[in-house]
Image (cartoon, rainbow over all chains, first blue to last red; front, top):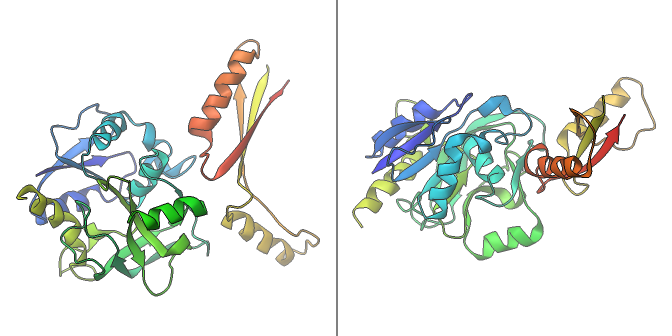
Length: 222
Length: 81
């Protein structure tokens, strides 16, 4: 599968994401924020970082980048889109995902190995995991508190749109310990932790993040 | 030069960690009597020409789409001369 990774001004983890895409058995395709062109990719990753310096609100300006017109249209047609950290913020600002991400409740940047439970292993990004599998993935964020109104939270829970949940200490004040969600269709997933930093034994906490990138490769053979 | 001001505030029910940090700093600096702080943003838009109803409607649209995130923030628009 050809998986595009968008670089915005201020993206940090685009190169790591491309590497993770390759290690996961797919072809990584660099995409540029200023192009109205998805280069015939089959899926898109919006990587972590500080697009546009986090000016205004995290992800608020990136949401209006030229390439996002194409990403939003393709997502609407069912293309798998994964937003990691800042990418998750961009997906919320784009209204591809409900809710919003606000500053961590304890007011500090957090960087740690985080235990998560995969709550929905049926999305194109999580099918390599077992339902309920516990994984350890790097987390690093300053504005990772997921919030939405009660009605939206109930709907997310009821429809299986909570994709991953924090176990142990809640690192950022996210409501109901939510670490990642999907849209109704399941093709668009936002995740605050960084699976692209957990794909090789040499660095990071292990290879538990690899599943987010091998899931797609598996999907091509279905 | 007329100016349109857009004030953006976190919704009352949304946690405001920045406001809380400021609130926590006040007593340390010897200020007392403040029970809560909410931190928002103020946008000052310089207008070329007159402030028309059409322009104000546009500013409302700007505030809704870019200047604020309606999921977590409220905004007000007013004209300053």
